Length: 302
Figure: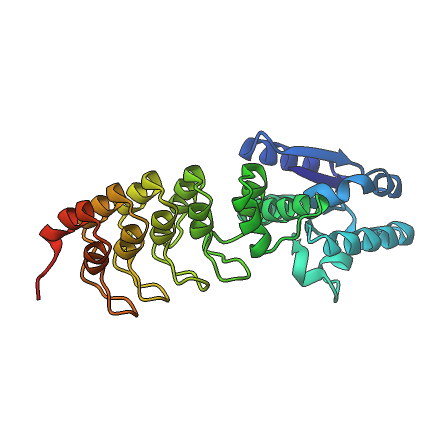
């Protein structure tokens, strides 16, 4: 990320630059004298900035033209939500933007103290802002629905930009579907693993079908994802909007290996759906002898 340092004090420039680079070698500093031509020359960098340091040795006697130029630049930085560390009262006491983006300092030593104290907060907020800006520049709205769309499309680069921009891993699309479910519905094991490891609620229920992530994996017949979610503690006895649990879905699709996997890991074969039928009942009704044999040891005869 880029930091712009504007000052007429050489020590301020050098100490600020040294601190920034020591904290993150990937950060870049753009240093310039505090004068009107520097403001004009660096306009192209304003939108890409992490933050800006503006320090005047003689803050009380800034020329009127430079003061007006600084006020204009400050307004632009505020519009882009770029933080400013400054000793110039004209800026940090700005009644419109001052409290939102400016951190005041009294002298060079105090500037370094403020920089050390605020560095992580400034950097984290800037990372999210710049990632969000990158999405918008590509014509991608920063919404949870779009986040879900790019998970479904298997676009890791865009998904990571959403995460960098601060999108919650527990966000839902416009239909109320959790991101973990979307990954399951698209058989994307890598995304399932990543989303879970980032803290997704493994038992969140979708608003459309009333499915948990593992139910979507079972519905898709994806044994790899089902095994993974079971290993992470997924609830196998959640009931969907039709009153079905995982075993009923697996029996209905005649998926022997999934029926065995679910039964062995605690899925109840006797939970009844809205028709008053359980997974075991369906296996018997449709003469799925192999499924009946798998479920019999777990079936509680009435």
